[in-house]
Image 1 (cartoon, rainbow, N blue to C red):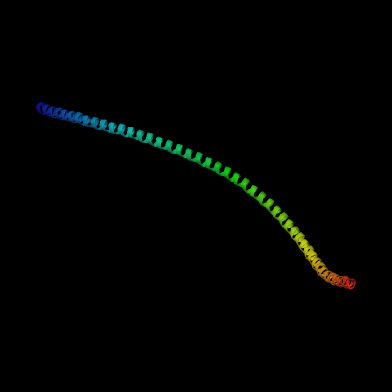
Image 2 (image 1 turned 135 degrees about the horizontal axis):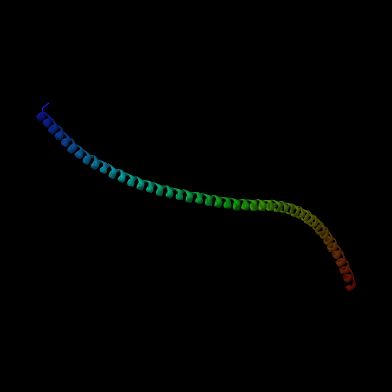
Length: 168
């Protein structure tokens, strides 16, 4: 190979090497720019993900607080229900006791009413007997009055007959 050819080949190699080097530099610059963009996007994605995680954590905390509030409300409602239930049980026991008292009182009233009815019936019978006796006595009194009237008439005639005979 001659020198000229070697120099041409060397020039060609150098030219190729310069082009390769320029391409490599250009490629490295694009790669670096793409890498930088990718890193920026990744950083932005991480920031957004952190924000999403933060919001999700806040939502979870709010949900947990709300669940806790609801559980407290449920416990308070249960306690109030148990209290009302206990009060109603006491009221029911009082009503049952009063019903028992009323039942006893009703029985006493019934017995008293029956005794009063018997007593009234007995008085009614006595009054009827007294009325009958009075009617009989009144009848006898009338008979006695009639006899007394007849006796008085006889006496008056007798006295009138003596007076009549004395005046003559």
